Amino acid sequence: MRAAILASGNGSNFEAIIQAVERQEIAMEVALVFSDKSNAYVLERAKNHQVEAVSFSPKDFSEKSVYEAELLHLLEEYQVEWVILAGYMRIIGPCLLEAFPQRIINIHPSLLPNFPGLHGIKDAFTAKVPQTGVTVHYIDAGVDTGPVIAQEAVTVAEEDTLESLEAKIHQVEHRLYPKVLAEISHNYKGA
Ligand code: GAR
Image 1 (spheres, rainbow, N blue to C red):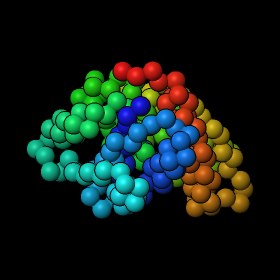
Image 2: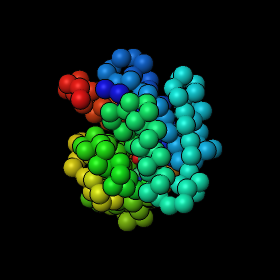
Image 3: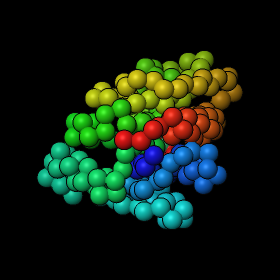
């Protein structure tokens, strides 16, 4: 399967995915990394793995729909079949949703439907819940609401700080996301 990875920041999930691709555990060709932030570290990581890296921002366009149309154009140019969100901190609009039905996957750092939004880890930590976790799901028109593909729980220990909880969640993400993508890629029979 030919995929683009969309990310807004550090890109540690991209790193975990591309390493699994390089080990041939995921049957996926990463055609492109796209970021809406020109200074995102994920772009460096992409270049280090010889993956095309492209960035532009919604701020460069008159409105969000024009930004999305440009992004769709880019994905079509690279003949992308699947869109993998890895810390892409924007809502996916109708233009991309219609172009990639059930073909946009996201990872979220909580046990959805709990703690959707931008601060899944911090919100769970502040709420003092005994467990939180990681969700991989298909994207739909809502915010972190699409059909769940896989979830894994993480215990919040008495002695956990926000930082230690973040580390635990990221560790699970870096294992779970490549595992899910491996399964999807091996079941994918092509367009
Ligand atoms: C990850 O924890 C991911 O689950 C989260 O952003 C982080 C990106 O880290 N995504 C969301 O919160 C989406 N709502 P990374 O850039 O190191 O992969």
